[in-house]
Image (cartoon, rainbow, N blue to C red; front, side):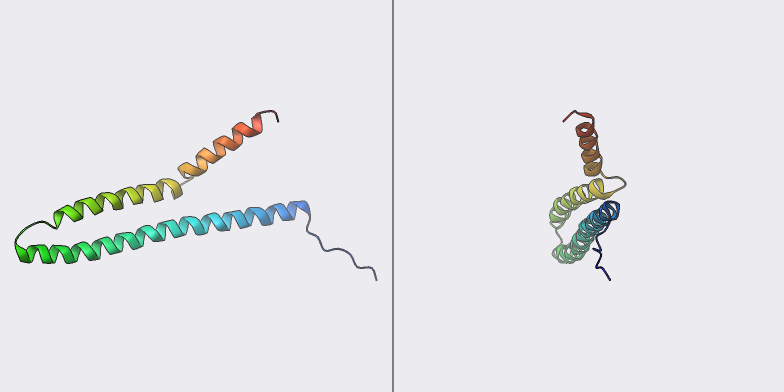
Length: 106
């Protein structure tokens, strides 16, 4: 009996590569979103504590870190959801560049 090589066809290898790329992208997007959720949870917990301390002192100083950190959290959220939401800005830009490169003669 002859031993036949068990190589994948080029089409199967291409599908495996595409599946691996999709898995990496999905993990990256999920990680980015999870990072934002953790950031938001810490924001809420810390600022709730600061508000309790601030109300006890009678001065609303806690509003400054609340606003500043809130702005940072909002920017973080925009960066995450613009990059991962829908087709994603980054993916659209990448696809536009791929399309330009494919149209250009090599």
